[in-house]
Length: 141
Image (cartoon, rainbow, N blue to C red; front, side):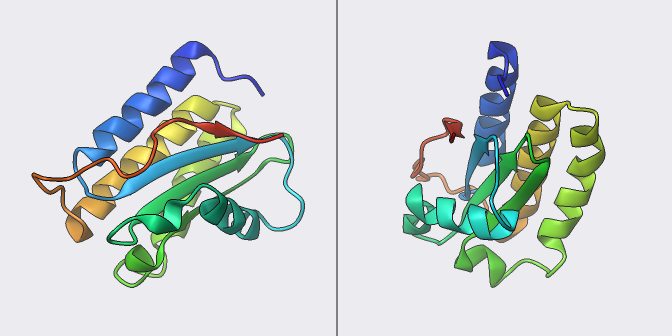
């Protein structure tokens, strides 16, 4: 899958906007195929990308394997300890119909903004907040 430059800009802008509301850190990883369950794959990538190293353990990874039509959202321990159990499922269910239309940029941006909105109530933006993780989209094989 190739995201257009505009789609990539839209996703990056969504990450920046979401992170202005919360001290949480959001990343997107896209690859073609996912062997096994997408949540398990996202958890592996979460650690490979160093997302477990934030001070408040409040990183979120939105993962998409576009050719296999699989995706998931995973968060670090600090988030899972505070958000309702259905938190990730609700956002995933909102993204699903947009992804079904192959509107990947729009779906990812929607998910990012929703994550930012919900995290803001649990991990509000701090005046001295620093961007602990890259906002760049990472791509796999």
